[in-house]
Length: 291
Image 1 (tube, rainbow, N blue to C red):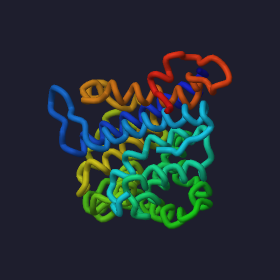
Image 2 (spheres, rainbow, N blue to C red):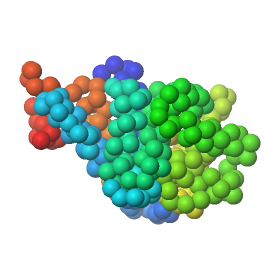
Image 3 (cartoon, rainbow, N blue to C red):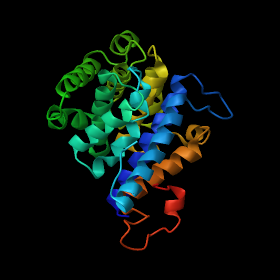
């Protein structure tokens, strides 16, 4: 794996572990010692990653795949879909948005929920490749050219701009993210990350990253906003932004980090092969059977 790929893989790990840490911080579940309990978004995201890998393998070996409703517009449609952003390295923005819609709609049939999820995953994909949050947000052609995304881009920009004018304000955060919907989770996360965007002379530290998660946790539905905040920060800055002493106590840290590493490996190296030659890892299919 090249140096660039390794950096990208660290960002994928940062995204996944940031989601998990934010989910726990947002629930107020960070004791001074001992395990930090995992939240619902963490568990759902783990199943999403496992499903992505299995579906990708099935597509490579069998040539057919349907990527893995109610009327809900809840935040879990978005938070469990966030790891799909890693596929931005392999598929177009249009394809990524379509996939995010499909995955979110499996359980959340309200158009606002799955359209918001598509916008969030597209933005997060841009964060994985960007040098700064400003760059990811300003990449508006990626969102504007997608069906139904212009409205969401406008709201993302508004949340970003409000952070420049009145950063880190609890009242402003509550206004942008008033409830447990997918849109609130996205706009709240954008506001917090923009409030803590580093300047060249003062790069973001682990302490500031944790301060951002604590800020996000103050939203009315703190766990969803903090999960989105953690995913965005991890995608921008890599896994090193998260304090080892906290990450190591996360209840599902081994599971989530292994899944993140395997997702990056599947996207970059396809260990199970494609059915036309021997696999690089003969046990990969047993690990992630693409039935």
